[in-house]
Image (tube, rainbow, N blue to C red; front, top):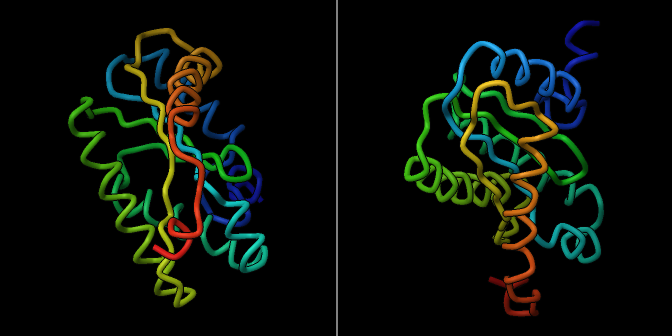
Length: 164
């Protein structure tokens, strides 16, 4: 029952409540690392074109890619429909940027394996440096600002993007 109460039922990742509790505890005892929030791009287009079960496969593929690439030392959670966050205690900005690229490749490969669809699973990321005593709410607010600035600057999806 403990596991059910602390994990997301679709992905098996931590849920928001559990992540928030563990992140706040980590920040109370140490500083450093990076906090990221990731939001899948164009999930609605996948749902509209292929159905919600395939959309679920996209979410699951992205979650599995996060776990595979980020590893056991990181806290990873699904905090909303297509939103995820992670705490990377030992990462710097360059490392995070490399990991984000790897997550994208792994997610696409996993989605292809699950569905047979070679669909670009793109996502936008906001990243912030962790500081002692900052709470989850403070970190998500800061990372959200960066995330939505990136989303506003990206191009709208086209038929070519869907087929790529």
